[in-house]
Image 1 (cartoon, each protein chain N blue to C red):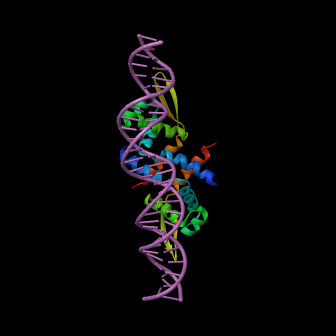
Image 2 (image 1 turned 90 degrees about the horizontal axis):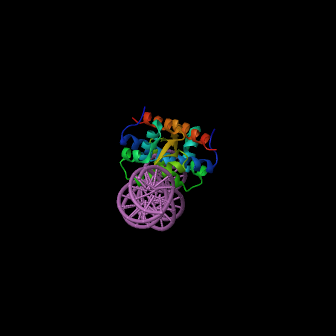
Image 3 (image 1 turned 30 degrees about the horizontal axis):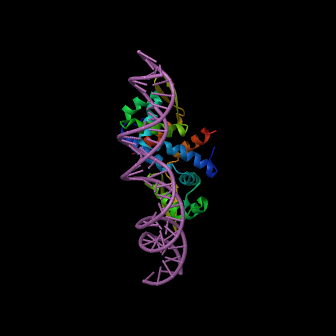
Length: 95
Length: 95
DNA sequence: CTTCTATTTTGCCATATTGCCAAATAGCTG
DNA sequence: CAGCTATTTGGCAATATGGCAAAATAGAAG
């Protein structure tokens, strides 16, 4: 299946753009293993929690993650693991 | 193979960032089929040729394309087709 | 060497992104 | 209900990006 129109490319680009940040890649990769709350991700990332929250919003808007409440915490999960196949492909690429 | 360090993620992110633009996706997809000169890509894209040239520079810096001179033209080619597998994966994803 | 053609580089401006802090909100818990 | 905790939002400054136009360059052609 190949993209054709400018709209197709714009839609793809917006998803790719959402992935195009080191912190967001780290987050996606963590979510591969398990659902994770924001505070846990903050510890992992090391940035201010509001910054982490904004990154999660970007990923959510792109349709890459979703959240579920469990008690006091919001647990984020990965919606489309295929994006990480791509990340792995790139990891293997660089020498 | 999984990325671990912040540097790994930064390297991946810079490649992904290079892809994160509709025009550059269009360029990459065109290069899938054949080597192409800048003026041909300009016609395809519709932007000013200096803009197209800048996009190509971004892709070249990311290691995604390379150029070869043939007479007056520079023919660009795709270095790593795996990036398009990813693009196709996303194309299939959106509903 | 001079001229022409394809391409790149540079300068400029408008717009978008990033990340921090402070303040606001959502919703559980008692 | 009130209080608490996790998370989001708004605002701001610094930085990066996109696109056009003008100037510079590389090589072809004469």
